Length: 116
Image (cartoon, rainbow, N blue to C red; front, side, top):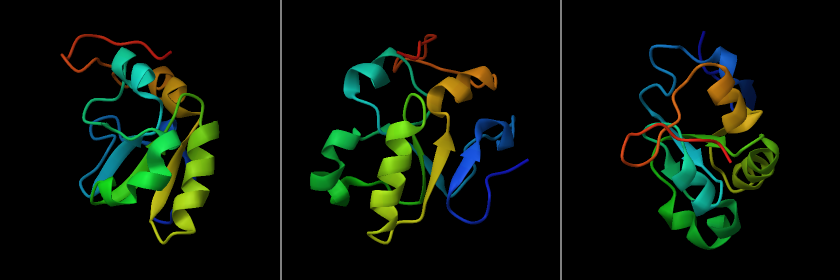
């Protein structure tokens, strides 16, 4: 399975187990810093939703996959960013679904993390 070719919502179950975030995509974790520090997807970039508006220039290059804890904040951010011309996808059900699909959750030091 793979990420849909057209921006929008998709399930963690659609991700390829061997390459969940394919080349050209960036997983942008929009949870608050304390949530991200507790546990995140390997290679994810953190830019909290509460800071997006003032940090558009800090968005990473590439197609953005947005993730929060449950998918609620990230779908709002997806709509907001799409209105500003960004190609964005939303990980429906968020990092909880990522973990339930069997993908790793780590801390910055590589040790196992938790979704809070």
